[in-house]
Length: 288
Length: 332
Image: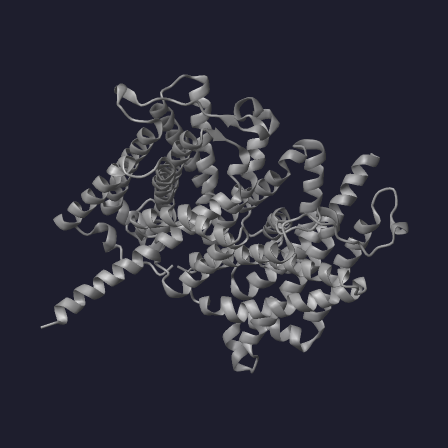
C-alpha cells in the first residue's frame, strides 16, 4: 500500500511537469492551431540559460525569473519572425518549420553548452521532503500549482488576459473592437515559452540537463494535452497529472521502466481513436 | 505544402524523358566499376534512402498524410530481414520481399486508426511511434529475436551465378535494380486512376468522397504501400550495414527521412532521389564544420526552404525548366 501511495504521489509530481508542457502546447494550439514540436527544446534552452546564470553567481530565484524573461521574449520573437509568415500555409509546411526549429535550438544548445549531461540544482531545502515525496517533488508540485493559479488569474481577471482569449476565439471580431490580434498571438507564444521554461527548469534536477532532456517529457506533454482535450487549457493541465500517474503506475506494475515511452504512444493512440476531443475538450463539427 | 500540379505525375512522358531516365540508370549502373569501394557504399545508401523517401513521398506528398515515424517501418524491415536470414536460411532477396510484405501489413493496420487522425494528429501519433521505437526494439521479451540492446549481426552472402563481382558491387547493383523496379511501380501507380484518387483525397477529401472514392480503403492502402517501400529500404540497409541495433533507429532517423523527403520535393518521384543525396552527403559536409552543426544546418535549410521553395529541389528544377521553355517560346 505504501509503495502504491509512493508511486501515485510521485506520479502526480511528474504530472505537474507534463501539465505545464501540455498547457504551453494548448495555449499555442488554441490561438494558432499549430502544435509546437519545438516547445520542449525552447524550455530546455531556457533551462540552460538559468543554469548559466546560477553558475555565474546569481541567486536561484533571480536566475529563474531571468530565464523566464528570456523564454518569454524568445518565444514571442520566434512567433513574430519565424512562424508568422506561415499563418496561412498548409499543415505540412508548418510541421516542417517546427521541426526545423527543433533541430536548430537543439544543436545550438549542444554547441553552446556541450552535449555533456550536467546536474541542475534544486532550490528546495531537503527538510521539506517526507517519506512519500522528496523535497524537490513537493516544491515542483507547489511551483506548478502556483503557475496554474497565476495563469488562471491572468486570463480571468485582467483585461489583457481577456483580450488574449478574445483574439484566440474570434480574431476578426476582436480586431474590430480594437484588440491588436497579432501582438496577442506573440504574447501567447511568449507566455507558452515561459510556462515551458518552468517545466524544463523543474524537470532538470530530476532528468539532468542535456540538449535532449525534453524528448520524453514533450511526448508525455502531447499525451496529456490530447487526453485532457487539446482545446481546453485546464483539461490539458488535469491531463498532465493523469498522465503522470498512469506513467508511474504502468512503469511500476505493468510494463516496467523499459517501455515507459510506449505508454505515451498508447495513450495518444487510444485517446485519438476512442475520444479524439479528449476528456474535457469540445467536439469540433465541420460544416460540409 | 503548396501542392504542385497533379499533372506532374499523370501527364504522358515524352520519349526524351524516357531516354533521359534510361541514361541516368545506365550511368548509375556503371558506378561500381568507376568509384572506390567507400564511395560505392555511400551510393548504395543513396539508392536505399531514395526507396525509403519514395515511400514517404507517396504517403505525405501525394496522399497528404504526414508521417514523422517512418523510421519505425525502416526498423521493422531491417530487423525482419536480419532475423529471417539468421533463422530461416531464406535467400536475402526473399527475406527482403517478406520484410516488405510484413511492412505492408503493419502499415495497413497502423493506417486503420490513423484514418481518424487528420493532419496534425497523425503527425503527433507517428512522432510518438518514432520516439518509442528504440525502446520497443530493446524490450526484453523480444530479446531472443531482436538481440536487445546489443542488436544483431546480419549474415553475409556472396554474389549469385558466380558473377565476378565483389560483395559491395553486387549489393549496389541489386539495390539499384530493386529501386528501379519500385520507382517504375510507383510511377505507374501514381499516374493512373489510383494516383488521381490518392491525390484527390489530399486536395479535397469531401469532393473525393462525393466522387465515390473509398477514402478509408485508399488511405490505409497508401499507408501500407508507403510502409512497404520504407521497409524494403530498411531490409537493404541491414544488408549494407550487416548489423542492426536499436540506437540506429531513433526518432532522428524518422525526422531525417522527412527532412530528405521535403528537401527533395515531397510531391514528386524524382524528389526522392535528390532527397537521398541530401541526407547521405550533407551531414558529412556539415560534420566537417562541427558535429553540432549538422542538425542546425538541417533545421535552417528546412525553414529557409519552406520560405523560398516549398516544393523542394525537384519543384525548383521543374520551375527552371518551365521558365526556360517559356523563354524559348517568347524569343522570336
